[in-house]
Length: 278
Image 1: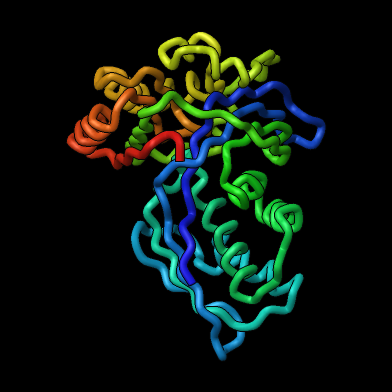
Image 2: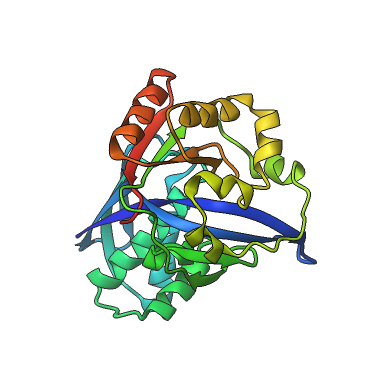
């Protein structure tokens, strides 16, 4: 059984306050994009998880990554048997694209199907929340408005103009969460994401922002360079996603998005383009 774990981008990311529990209140729109990791799972006669990794190198102990944690979480709740799994990693890590969260949640969905657990969406999202704040979004992987520390999701029925493409470029810089939050000053937001439907893409910079972007670009000027490349190639709107370091641009055609990716790769960056409305 094979599953595809999509990346996501943040359309805007507002840090609106710091909470008593030490987390920050956030406001954003999550949008799934066509850059996928691939996971294959099979039942095994041997108890436990036998996990194989290919593609991009994943740092740290494989037993502690979110795919492994997802297996053990389901085993703890439902007593499932052994599994052989293969994760092919294509989404850059530490890029603000949610690849790890997506992998963990994809694993939950695959185990649900493999062992015929018949989880409801509500049960699946609750299970995903035990893995991490971003994980519930990937259970359905549909556009959503996000609030709280990322755990509150509201379905967002929005479509980009026809023929809009998203190009993403990642310069290979790792941005630590600590650095990201040290450089941000929480401020109130009155953002109404429904306004994006009546605002031309070229004017989105007047109402959208990523509150992490100025501080991160000051620490890593290359990230600003990535956005400038996307803009020069015709992006109608460009922004760093999450806490970085990947940036995306919204383009009016597939041709312009693919050209932007080609230029990004000549700079030694990883890049991917996909149609905005999936």
